[in-house]
Image (cartoon, rainbow, N blue to C red; front, side, top):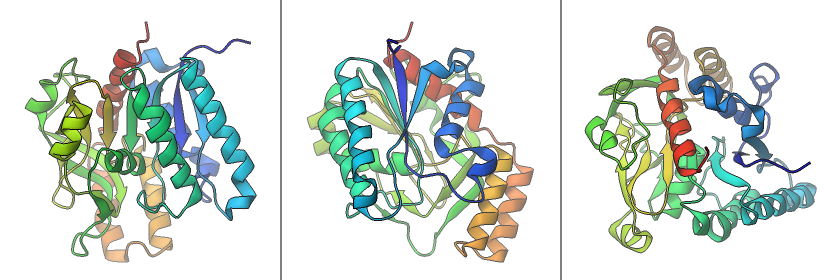
Length: 292
């Protein structure tokens, strides 16, 4: 059967014990975000998931990883892949000693970036940091005094700049000066792409917004050929999913009881506006992926 054009979802974290049994993997969450944000994305044929992340020794997954990357390259070359979403992960995006991350770096540089704008690129959390690194941004662990940012969090949004983007994917009726988005990260992007990258890519970027713990909550093309939309937070996580992940973070001692209580209260109290960003991501993929 001939494939239809689709958006490839790179699942950057294998199924997570204690979470995925109920809510699916992070690729399922991303797919559901698109489907709930736009009627145009309800068809399962519009997206294909690729597991690009693995646990264990390299030799145990080498063949599977190479097969996945070969299929992606083939479908990029044939024009079937019309967009890419890179999901979150518990791994550090800058840890290139992990073989699957090094392989993903190579895929981005050799296959994906040369095909943009035909292939718009979306990054969520880990994916945001990974793409930002390839745009020349500094990426690393957050300052100790900031630590982990988690649970539903209020972002200050750069509304006027986002609405001024060429073919802006944002709906002026939905986008406000503040948005409540689920967050789970301790690594950050320290700034927008530097002038050298902007000049070489011939592309300008704007920052989605900020919080007190993280100044760059996303990077979006404002003009130019490269089409990138990244989000530090997790618009794909529903409130029940966020609660479960907070419980797992507490169990793993990534956060203490005091922080758990605080962010659990925020997550319960604040209206989760992830679908606002989900709608913008869907519009971005539809516009630049040349779907009709």
